[in-house]
Structure formats: structure tokens, C-alpha cells
Image (cartoon, rainbow, N blue to C red):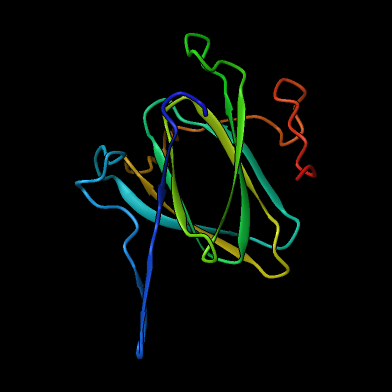
Length: 149
């Protein structure tokens, strides 16, 4: 696993009224600080990739559909430099993936319905000076095959 990436299995608690799922708590190992929470979606087959941050860490949870989340370690001083990881996220196997600063990440909707990712980030988004550094989803530097299983 890429250095600094953490995965937390989540538990859905159903009752006769519906469901509840804790996603991230301030006493979790991967919790750093709170910046903001947002959601992003993708339609079936759509890829949203690659980008990384220099100031913030991300915490991904898929709450609708199914997403293939991919990570690429572009940090030259990391013991896992140039490694990739992928994770399948959905409510069928709920988990949180903590993505450290400097790790490129993206996701592909692999369900037949729109997928939705909740992201709890450690900094607030600065619209005037975004902390986002992008590569194309098929950039040869990463060489990731979005169609492999």
C-alpha cells in the first residue's frame, strides 16, 4: 500500500427506520483536521482523474453506486514512489480511503448508476488559489489502466 494511505472499514447500522453509517470521527487514526465536506458524482463509465494537493489530505467514502478509486504516489522521497493502488468503494463494502498530501488520485464510476463520493478534506477550498495539480486520466507518467479489474 502507498505510504500514508489508510483504509477504514465502515459499518452500516440498519434499523426499521433506515440506516446510519459513521464515516470519519475525530478519534480515528487517519483524522488530521477538518476543512470541509463536499460530494462529487460521476456517471457510469466516467473517469475523474488525476490530481493531487500540496496542502490538504482527502478522505473518500462512496455513498451511492460503485467507484474504482485509484492512487498514484508521485512523491520522489516516498518509500512507495511510483506505486499505484486501487480500491472499490460502495455501500456493499463500505470503507473510507485516506489519501495523503502529494498522492495523485481519481475515480471511475463502475456501476450502472451514478456514483457519489463524499470527501472530507483537511483544508477549505480556496477558489482564488486552488490547491490542485492535475494530470490527464491517461497520462503516460502514471500509466494506469482504468479498464483493468
